[in-house]
Image (cartoon, rainbow, N blue to C red; front, side, top):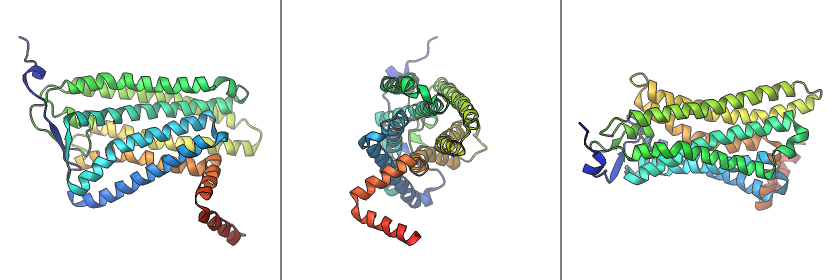
Length: 331
């Protein structure tokens, strides 16, 4: 006998209720201040990176174009969840509309999938620049860079579209309380009156394939890069190449390690890892990389650091005199 069609017999709830971080209610004000500070740094840092890259003609290279897109994606990722989190922790505004919840979820999944693709593209850029420098301008043309960016977005859309369809077609007839501080996929799917396993399994398998393949290609590219770097006769060239690649590796570790930990802890950590730890890990995964990425690139990349200093001293003349005083004191 065919079961009832839930979507035809019952209306979806108007809103969901976000719990926040279960067990840490007494720390909400401190968490709101902490997240607000990180979000402000993320917005300022990524906006500076995008402004400097777009305004400086000497930075119109593929690596900096990818970095500019990465900064935009980081801002979207953080903006998808942090304002609502801060509102929840500060004022207790815990309700979120049914459709708004799934829109937020789509933005989060799309941004994370696009970021993974961008990190792969940046690794490929470094591979060509270091291992095939004479062919760099011929391989990484403007059309090639644009095509890679479009392909990354299409891949993310192909991943998120079936997942969004499966989630929005689940019947929600019971509790609407999400034990999380944003509309995290697993937490929302568990509220459904039907079996959420197909959508959860799809998310896990696709995430593992997408991230696993990206990490494998990134690792292979950096093995080839390191082999080429250590084959250089010039120590200065070795240090320059390692410095540039070091910032990329730092950003990738910052993104992939907490991300995969968050996914597998949610799946395998039931009963072992406290719920507040799972939620906190998922929250920080979406705000820490967007905050630290511009700092890492600003400090580690000489060209970005130099242009940022020039841009800031031009916009804020008192800063120029302060920097001059620091140089005089050092000398």
